[in-house]
Length: 263
Image 1 (cartoon, one colour):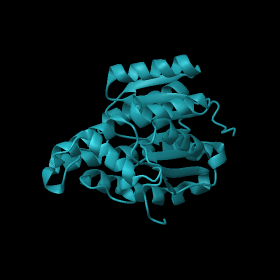
Image 2 (spheres, rainbow, N blue to C red; image 1 turned 120 degrees about the horizontal axis):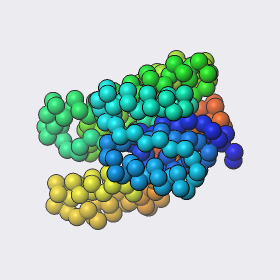
Image 3 (cartoon, rainbow, N blue to C red; image 1 turned 120 degrees about the vertical axis):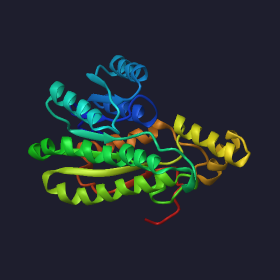
Image 4 (tube, helix red, strand yellow; image 1 turned 90 degrees about the horizontal axis):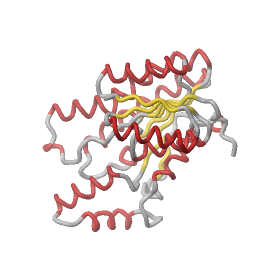
């Protein structure tokens, strides 16, 4: 399938590793040029160089903390300086800490909201005027299966990512007349460092082992295994494409069948 991403400009957040890196690699293979951001300079630089070498894409890497207004301004301004536009925005952020409600202070909640909700709103605010002017754009938010079926011990993620879903579903209707789509992609248990960290955290709380925690998740997944980052990235690339022009306001799971609901 020809996705029509050749020459498009994609801004991918939290792109130095895990799902963000996989998405960046997939978009570059489809011909997009990239603006990548993350907080860790070394990992981000290595990711950008690897994608340049593999695909020949132009890749701009910007060290930025998207929980702060200055970080959002830095990455979006650099995108406009280098390319003059952003066609595809992929919002993404490291998941907030695991733990029950009483383990998290007001400050921890505020940080989670800034990192996982406010960053989405403000990145969108920065790129949306240009998309409306050009009457084409793709906004894709990386959320979680937790917004459809809350995950135990993840009250912060369950709450804040659900707020992103409400924002995106409402915005989708507002911008549809301008040829802009807004969708969410919900990763399930995927072989990333985030999931490894969650396995370790759960094992510590329950007196088990990370291997037994992973096995328990695999037992809940009809496909019987964790997902791979490139499987998730393929869905994002499709939603970013010309071919996905009539799909908007959706939250699409990439979870091996873990969510059991009908909708």
